[in-house]
View 1 (tube, one colour):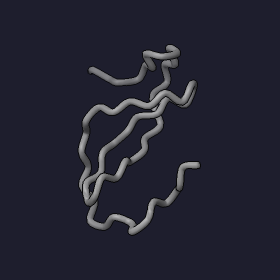
View 2 (cartoon, rainbow, N blue to C red):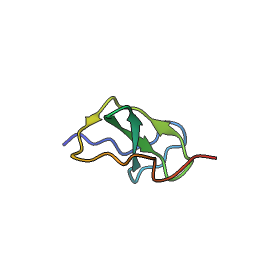
View 3 (tube, rainbow, N blue to C red):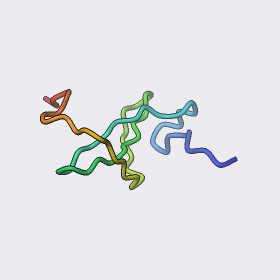
View 4 (spheres, one colour):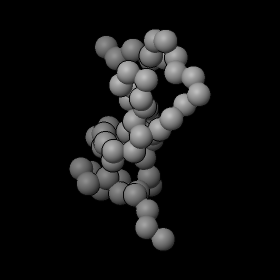
Length: 60
């Protein structure tokens, strides 16, 4: 089985956190390394029945 688990930046080997980046009504999965915080965009598009009107968490 092929898995995406290892961070290329720091070598963390236990998988990733997942975030959704909204672009209009489209959502894209982002992988975030819990070890160093490096984010990766694998190009995976997600579809949701409802998209919140405002982001749930605002970046500072």
